[in-house]
Length: 185
Ligand code: GRF
Image 1 (cartoon, protein in one colour):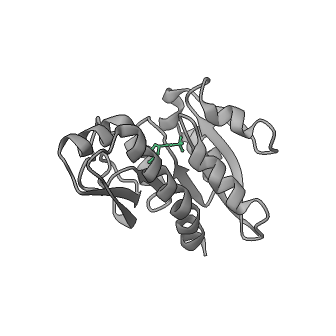
Image 2 (cartoon, helix red, strand yellow; image 1 turned 90 degrees about the vertical axis):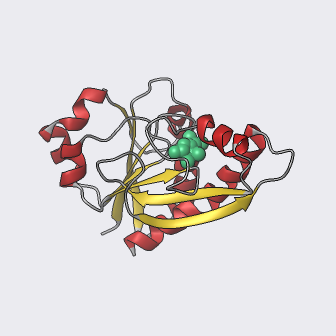
């Protein structure tokens, strides 16, 4: 039986798409569904032509037992730009089964308001010489779960939020599917 993953995404969904492409002919792993809380998320359009169901959910269901029963079918929950906090009850039922990708070298630039461009802006404002990505297990805190994988990139003198975001996305697209494959192997 193929291992099932559910990808949670609130935005563009380039990582979700990359993961889909990586596993589309896999005999080990399949994408069971895409979950989004944002009816305008780009990820919906990206998956429209695939046979993978995209579910638009309401924030309040994340803490419900019925939802937990439904989602327990999957082997791994992958947060790829999912902006809602995962409730404690959910985290506790799925210990070590939820992973997140964060666009900095945690513990640096993590925490409640550190998402999207805020992260890159802060990295550049602090004149950091390097940044990177962190893939980590999700615990009850913000970006505090055990680190699984990190990769780095260097910043140059003229770095902008957009140029750094591009470097970070390239690292994410390269490594995230491989880390998922490794975890499920
Ligand atoms: C990524 O940079 C990821 O690190 C962060 O959100 C972004 C999602 O990008 N958590 P995309 O929607 O996959 O393009």
